[in-house]
Structure formats: C-alpha cells, structure tokens
Length: 128
Length: 128
DNA sequence: GTCTTATTGAGAATGATACACAATTTTTCA
DNA sequence: TGAAAAATTGTGTATCATTCTCAATAAGAC
Image 1 (spheres, each protein chain N blue to C red):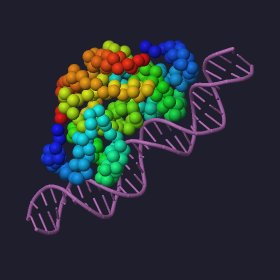
Image 2: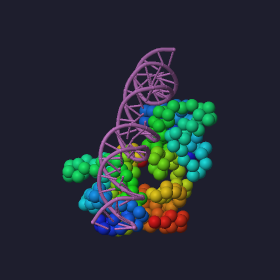
Image 3: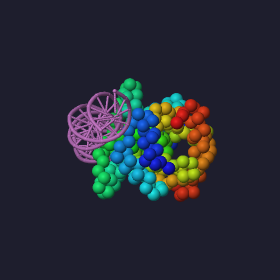
Image 4: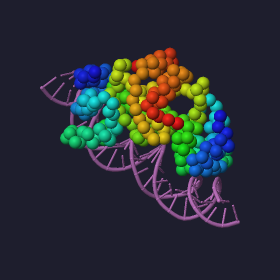
C-alpha cells in the first residue's frame, strides 16, 4: 500500500513535487472501501464536504498523474466520464463487466485474465 | 456476417426501421480491413469523401444503436473519443492493450479471456 | 395510397476535460 | 538559512465529443 513518503519519494525521483493536495487525494482513495470508485467530480464534492477544498483543475491533473504513475487505475465505466480507484496488486485486482444496453456493472476477480494481459504486455515490449 | 436484410429484420423486430443511412454505415464497417476502427468523426469524413453525406447526429445515433444491438463494438482507446469496429465472433474477437503513459495500443487474441468474460456474464445474469 | 411513427439533419446545448497564466509553493544549493 | 529556479495551484476560459431539440421527411402497416 502507498504511504505518503513513498509517494513523495516516487514523485521526487521523477523531478516532481509532493503537495498537500496530492497527499489528500491519495488518502481519500486509500480510505475508500473496496469496490468503490470516484469520478473527478465525485472527489471534488467529497473533499468539499470534508472541508478540504481542492480545485477541479488540480483534481483532474492529479488523477491523471497518479494513474500514469500506477497508483490509481482509470476506469471507463458506462457513465460517460472516467472513474478512479486504487490500483490494487494481484489478489485484489479485479475486472469490470458492463452491459452495453443497460449499463449494469459488476466486478469480478480472475487471475488468468490479469496474467494474460501482463504476459502479452511484456511480450509486446510494454514496460513499467 | 451481417447482411442488409438481417439488419432490417432485426430492426423491424424491435419496432425500428431500416434506412439508407444505416445500410451505408453497416457497409463501411463490413468493408473495413481487420484491425481498423473508426471514430464518429472518422466515419463522417470517410463518407464525405465517398460522396455519401450523413449528418454527424445520425452517425452518433446509429453507432450507439448498432453497438447496443451487438453489431458494432464500442472501443475506449486512449484518444479521448470512442472508436467502433465490427463485433466479430470468437475466432476473430480480440482485446486491446493500452499503455496509460504513452497510449501505445495493440490488439491480441485470447480465447480464455473472452470465455472468462462470457462465463462471468452468464453467471451474473447478463443476457443478450 | 394514406396514416402513424421513427428517423433525419441542422444547429444549439451540455458536460467532461484541458489549457493559460499569474500567484504561490517546493526543492535545491550556494 | 534564504534566495533562485522550477513545479504546482486556482480561476477562469477554451475545447471537443456527444446529446438534444424540433421541424421536415421517409419507412412500414393496413
């Protein structure tokens, strides 16, 4: 699991900086119960309710950044906007099944699917 | 493979109508070489070049309709807009692997992944 | 053929996301 | 420690994909 200091370390490694906003966003996702995911707008509202105001721009920027770093996972569900969740390692990693008619969405776990993706990625020269 | 008449039959079955626009769109996707996919805008331009003008609204409406019918497959690649391709059955069905950093995209085939999805869908009560 | 109703086209509206830029923080390093 | 350099933030604006509205048109049923 990602700690504040490991986030900072990884940011600095790439010439980026730790900020209170990034720390706050990470904490929200870490405290989110399993199976939950937030859109940028969701996160913005949730933070407002907690009295921690972060601008929408900053939220969009950091959700994208943290997804590219592998900390968050960007989900294309059927709502017309992206959702984000903590990018869990193998035993907790899951997939989504979405009906193109009614948008019903479920999560399921399947190691074979995950491994096939990882194996194919490696074979094709994708790297972390 | 989908013919004009089977499309018409399936539309009528649901109280919908066959139109020249729908026929044209189906034909474009059927003649598209494997591995190619089009966005709504792509399709609009392509049709213009062929002298077959169909309004963007109609294109959007029908891409969505045909996806819900299972004729097309809606792809969420990394370009910020949707792409569509013919929804091929099993031996030709494929998956996409997309890098969240550089957007590199490849296609690969894997029956196990497809079957896991189908099996899970059935178990969860999804139906065609 | 006529009637009912779905569909089309044009343009406006919406909504998610990106961008520009001045003000503010982090980090670095002298 | 305390500038200086560079990244980040917030505000407002811009962009771009997609949806919506509505009058005109065309498909299908009888």
